[in-house]
Length: 139
Image 1 (cartoon, rainbow, N blue to C red):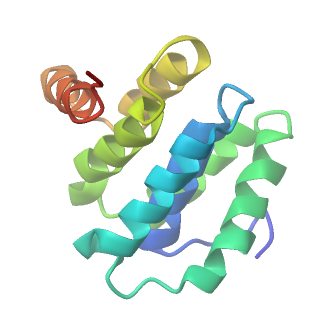
Image 2 (cartoon, rainbow, N blue to C red):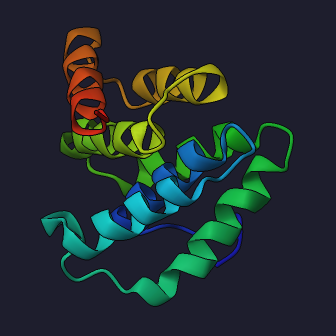
């Protein structure tokens, strides 16, 4: 898969999760574990070919390393993902961002960009974000 390749809808969800994790230039183990768990357990990934992960990851990292690469990545994601999956995509991104117990800085800005790019209603986004924070609270 090259940077100009098309993605499947499931690849698009994975790419978005990877992009959120990489957004602060510190891919944490908790985020990788969360991505892996979601791919292994969520119905949206029930038939996903995990052998595609390295190619999808490379595509994300290649694009993030280019000028205007984030715009190109969002274009690939929008092309691959049905509009009805926008809130699902945003929820997965929020879960990855919240996996290490905090959403701040670059991750918060990335979530804002995703919300905008995926046209997720502000009120729905707030509810999704609150749910992610609640699921990842610690004692």
